[in-house]
Amino acid sequence: MDGFIGRRTELDRLDDLLRTVKTGGRGGRPGRAVLIRGRRRVGKSRLVEEFLERAGLPHVFFTAVGGSRAEDLSGFRAEVAASGLPGADRFSDLPVPHSWDTALSLLATVLPTDSPSVVVLDEMPYLVRADPSFEGTLQKVFDRTLSRLPVLLVLVGSDIAMMEQLNTYGRPFYQRGTEMVVPPLSPHDVATMLDLLPAEAFDAYLVSGGLPLILEEWPHGGGLWDYLRQALSTPTSALLVSGERALAAEFPTEAQARTVLGAIGHGERTFTLIGRAAGGINPGSVKRSLEFLTGRRMVAAELPLSTRPSRETRYRVDDPYLRFWLSFVGPGIPSVERGRGDRVLDAIRSSWTSWRGRAVEPVVREALWRLADNGLPAGTNAVGGYWTRTNDPEIDLVGADRSPIAKKVTFVGSVKWLENKPFDHRDLARLVGHRSRLPGADENTPLLAVARGGCTAEGVLGLTPGDLLEAWA
Image (cartoon, rainbow, N blue to C red; front, top):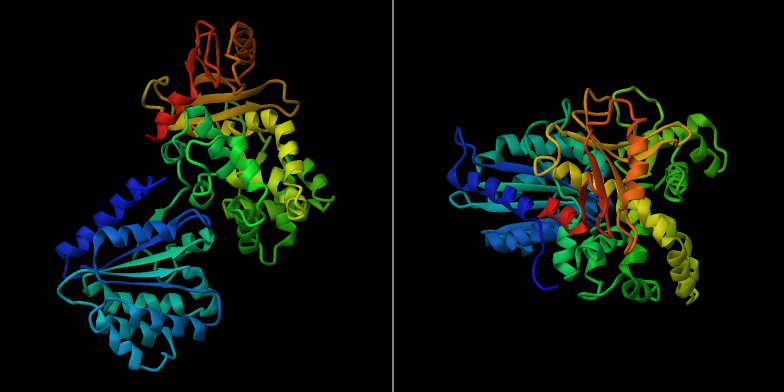
């Protein structure tokens, strides 16, 4: 796993912004800002470090620690003084700034005026929480000073909801920065990093969620069970600790929302069953918790995709790693800490096939959406599933021209993710029956089968894990 894997799109976008800084921009304002957001431990800071290393420019990289404003200002002064910016050593002789207005204004005096530089403020939400005036101060200094200098201001944050809000109407920094989302590494990146076959790469993706810290622990070319045996024997492995740290950061006070998330993570998908599994909390509290979780992109709320309106909302944990962690790892941590990770491994083995079959469905849908212009029926702009209250029928894949209420259904499909069991004529007959009961579909609607073991049935477009992997190539 040598070298830096993936992130070509993100690095290209940062290069484009830096190119604008170098060429001077418009109106004598070459300075640019970019707001980077993404889940914790997804590799945002590592991406920026790689960008800085490739750019080879003078820069300062400051990371807030979530303490007081005074602590952040002291840390900022120390980072600037230790940086390679021209005249940065003068910061060592200065007292700790008493405000961010002073600190950022002083920073501007040591930035080069005739060549580009980069300023990184990592974990920016901490700065906003510690000092409510920080946003306004940053806007003022950027407008008056930093935008007039050849500098790229990189603002990084793991609090996705807050980072989104920073660039919304009415906030001080509105429309001053380009937004960038750093996703987890894709299944294709996982295959490349670990040198795995396509089907094995999807297994690794479902367990790791594409988080670099977990993948760095994964033996090169190693199988799923070898990795899990190793990780579950180490209480400090990234597989174990990343989930707990992420939840502690996302839910410092919202214990009820975490309880609801746990219920969804254990497999409950409907409003009523989630409330029941969460200890019978009242519907109003369940509703508020679900709104909080969907607002923070922790949970996805989905509706059946067809030409008929439906109110049968279902919920699922949106992050693949957290989906796995909540199902198996979190509940098993006490056993791992007592040296009985083998019990957790046995629990995963007993449920793996059924759990994986459902967990892979949203990944397959994303792959098909990405492949919509490459071999799928024309007009496919949305990919989802279809279900009724009684799950009769329940259809894995539905392609349509739009969602959640389609004008036209473009295909109907099934996911069969079993080892060495292809999609055969019996599976096809079942899919044809489901198609006849899908609003908007008829006998001419194309059929699609996504099968881990291949497809032997005729009259259906068959896709394999290798075909899906190309969606992220």
